[in-house]
Amino acid sequence: MNKAILTIATAGTVLSLCAGVPAPQVSDVSMSQNAKGEATVNYNLSAASAVITLDIQTNATGDVWSSIGGKAISGAQGDVWKVVATGSRKIKWDATSNWADHQIPASGIRAVVTAWALDNTPDYMAVDVSELAQQNTQTYYPSADFVPGGVTNSLYKTTMLLMRKIMAKDVTWTMGSTTLEKARSGIETSHQVTLTNNYYIGVYEVTQSQWDLIQPSRSVPSIFDNIAYRAMRPVEQVSYNEIRSAANSTTADSSHDWPHPPNGNSFLGKLSTKTGIAFDLPSETQWEFAARAGNGDTKFGDGSSILVESQGIDVVDANLNLLGRYRCNGGMVWNGTSYVNPQWSCGAENGTAIVGSYAPNAWGLYDTAGNVWEWCLDWYDYYPEWNDRTVNIDPNDSTKSLSGKVGGENGNRMMRGGGWNAPAYECRPARRSGSSPSSRYVATCGFRVVCTAGLR
Image 1 (tube, one colour):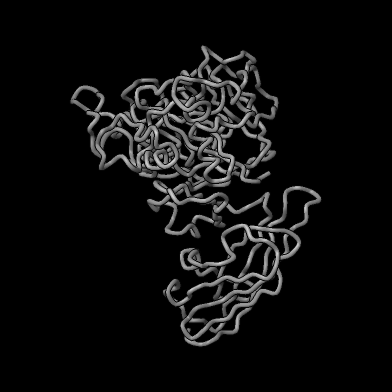
Image 2 (image 1 turned 135 degrees about the vertical axis):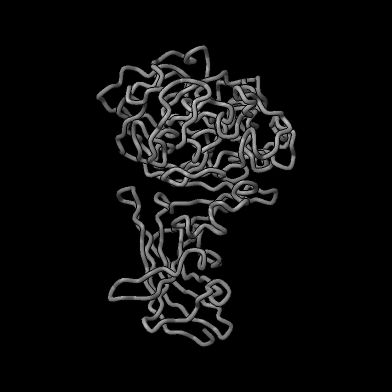
């Protein structure tokens, strides 16, 4: 590709989800290339600001075109992968460097510029939380294939938060479990739920490195003292209060209970200020919907069957072994008779695992089973009698529990997902647990974040 090329150029629009809001329009798309193989894509954006994404396609057969792959395109720079204002815009793409097989076939090549309405943005959002991060500089990508470096890149476990869009608005689904799950508890009553908003949720649990960038006054909230393995492990000794309600573990401030925003001195308050995005903890409804990833009763989030049939503490679940760190697959140490706590100076083989060490669920989320229990917004209590009727809960009013008791059961907050030292039956999507909001709960308390970032 050492000469200017003639291309077909096209535009796409992802419509707003809000009736009456103007949809952004892309027009006048063109692409040219200089002798160095550097391509320039020009386009015009009108009607409304939008997130802009780019695809390069080739191998046309009739009207069917194929992408050259997101990895070859994600390095494009300029007015792309971010919110762009209306006007004449430009994208630069180094085709020679980024596209290994860069010969133009006889069928030609085309640039596809897509405008995403700001309430219906792309599937992945990457948020910089490094020391030099600036507000409202998040970038967006239409699929995992386009995420720079791939979703498993260590950047998303250290200096950036990678978020996955969950299309939940007006979806009615079954929350909780039935007696088909042999190891269930009575607090998991199966009921129909309808969520009222789409949202982004963290692909990973928040790590030690990410915590330290936002809340350095309490660095390394970990009981493990092996520094070599700690940076990309989840925080596992943080309280609900210091995540959301206060600057420390013990001082709760009810004026920051949902729906009020987090305390400005809490982790979420500082994260929101640093990034310009209103982050929060997920409600347990948001958490379970995302963890299930479209799979129902008796299934893990990847669609595999829950095999454990008892609440025995040393029971192994072969499918859970693939999805997350728990008591029997590395969380604890087998001494020949039973599993016991590892030494706190343990290496990579015991205790928590580096986030993303196991397989993701069907929606690309890691460690929704095991590794650390994840705090949610809700007070801990029994579900009301909700069988066979639909309710809106997005999230529930966390000034009182779902059953209406102020402060829930014993004033505890909800935790989900199981942890590194939990038995298999506690790592099911429906499993509910709770702890005092001031508790760090013996090195098992972690979390992941959610935001809407304009989604409806």
